[in-house]
Picture 1 (cartoon, rainbow, N blue to C red):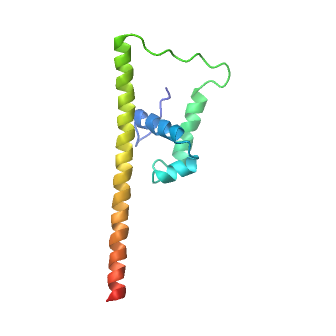
Picture 2: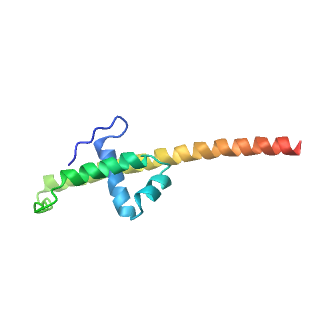
Length: 118
């Protein structure tokens, strides 16, 4: 796991965003635009570069096996739920921001319409 240095996002949020990006299959520019540029292209690119640098390029270590003990399974479930929750919180924040922006645009358009029709 990479330790990201971010003032805005937690490591769990960053990991969730990276996972969401990889799962989307979209180019990085399209992904960032669809999220209202949160995070910005440069920020996401830096995170992806950091993850790529943290992973060995040659002779990668064998993948960790799935936990087999009940405690290990519970811990993995809790970790995944935390990452999923962080992803959902990030999405909710983005959608709230989008709604606020659209409401402002609507109010401006309605005001302009009133001025034109008056």
